[in-house]
Length: 373
Image (cartoon, rainbow, N blue to C red; front, side):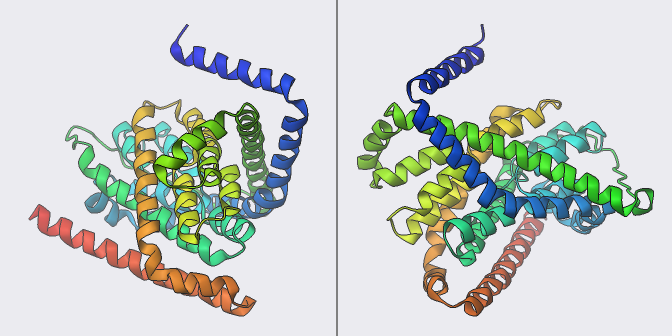
């Protein structure tokens, strides 16, 4: 029996043991996880996934990806079509980037090597989850969600640039032309809406199942004292509260539950945002399990993907912590501002982050241009 099978068997037996020994606590946790999914995740993710599905079927997303094709090769060292999974991954969130990458590979539109490279930074938490669920529902203000979203996307793009030099260029890696065509006239409006709603509900339901499963696993680790023991051991080393470390450990397993725990922390806003950003960038083992299952049809390295997510998490947390001082006053004011001022602050952050991103992209393109000369 392989080591992976042995570990999975042990984990399953441990879960069954906990279900028998702590039925009341685990049942309550299951109910809480369902409530978390139904009241926070479902209302924010379902409409967004439905709208994204409609855009895909209308061909709008491909046109956007085609517009950004000239940027991909000089900045990330990958083919232009990689803009498609990158943009859709940023719009839709986990695990859309991975799903689109697999589809392109299966259509021979993307080489295996480029698939490995784009996977290092195209699969990220979506804006509506970060802003709607975490920023608004958990932290009670969308401005914090926009700030974390900026840090997550910046960390992802920096990871892509870093991995441009991590992977050696393969001259014999032939990339066939990709002709993506989808005509809105081939499908009726009713079918487009029905398919989009069906796909969105299937995805959100699957996410709900993982939230419940990993919520029960987290509670099992709490009931047996494993998380508390680890948290106490790490608390003195990392100078963080036990509650914060428990939230981080929970986030490593399932990011939604971890973000919910960290949002109730008594630590400073800076520490809260940094920890939440780190676990959202990583995605948690729940999202990781979904993604690796999606990637199984193509020949990419799971170890390299996991390593890239760890690098992404570290870079995003680093950006969140050290850039916080630049926006601290505005974030704190936004928390206590009225509704109109809060919305104004949110749009202000979008504008500022957009300008910063474009400036960074232009700077890196200039550096790359002179480097190649």
